[in-house]
Length: 513
Image (cartoon, rainbow, N blue to C red; front, side):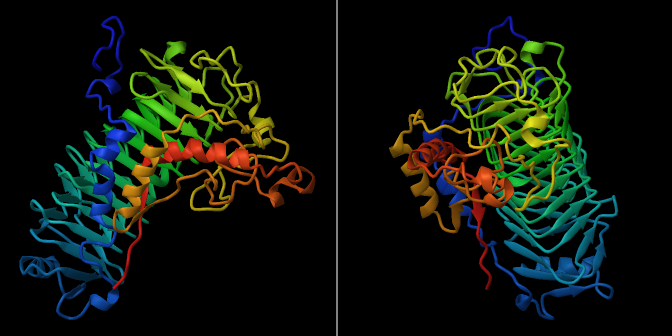
């Protein structure tokens, strides 16, 4: 049970592990930001095809897994693979290693063995590989005690009897995933695809993974992502569980399910969401899309998410929070819509919501009892058809992730107000971004709301939700209503510099040599 929770309150299972209470200042001062940069996004040993020669390349058919192990035993820094290899025992290594895939590179555990196992301090980089059908206790495919970076790779059909269906990252470092796919991986306990301390996933897709906690990802520290999560399943946290904090920037969650709490995300500390889309996620308990100690959510779209607890006051079809003793939970510039009449926002124990304006609800104001005082610019009772048109659905509307497009004339267009109501501690914000910028190889994905989830500009008055309609999408008459207003830009910039300063979501920029 969380500390100081009233004994008369039944705390759901999702809340019974531990509570982490790092604020933005604490995160910055703890060295986490610097730590992110210190990982470096250039792989431990950067590799390209030019680094592959007859001395470090293993090719199938002809060569086999034993030939790979010979190179690993010789502490070969870059090992190149071509063709498909079926393993009967794990490949082991105790040094900084890059495995680089050439044509058709594939490692297959044949549902009988773990594929890669690294010893303490051995960093691992995987590039251009398919890693399939691994089977292990911790880490169905990969067990690593150093940092791990995965680029342009595919993990499929891996199974762990404990944690980390595809990858188990054991240590205080980072698991960085970019441009990769994780499909049909499973773990009996934590992290259907990945178990790690701090996990960063950019430009990746996680689909149909399953576990007890965190259907796709389980982070013992933080989970930070700009990716797509589809059809993942867990008892708690259908797609993601983060013990410390979670940060979703430019991500899409669709059809993830939890048998208890947090259909898409369950965060035991902070949940930050910016420019993200949540569609048809569901929880049998509370928090159809997100359950978190507290949350700060902006310019995001929630459509047809469901929480199905019998206690309507603790439901939260979209998001539920349960604490209010660290920082306030707030919403600004979002769309919360669905065909049901249950509350989109929920709060239990000490949880409360602050409405900072520019939000659009399909439910009535009387239904949203978790909001203390509704902002004058927030709209209630707007139907899904009014907001998105008939047949609202996800589509490829540009950008790296699918989104739900507004229709011209939607009540969400140009609703975010020209008002400066956010108290921003500029020194704290500056110190956080200074640390990020100074860290080699990393920069924030976005520190202002100047772009929507697709990367399209947000000019003048902002639209609520993850998508900003552009002039060619609005039509000439409606486009003329778009106002370029410096006050609006300043207000939103302040609001989401604060949000972005806490998110700390960073993108790795790989260099090639």
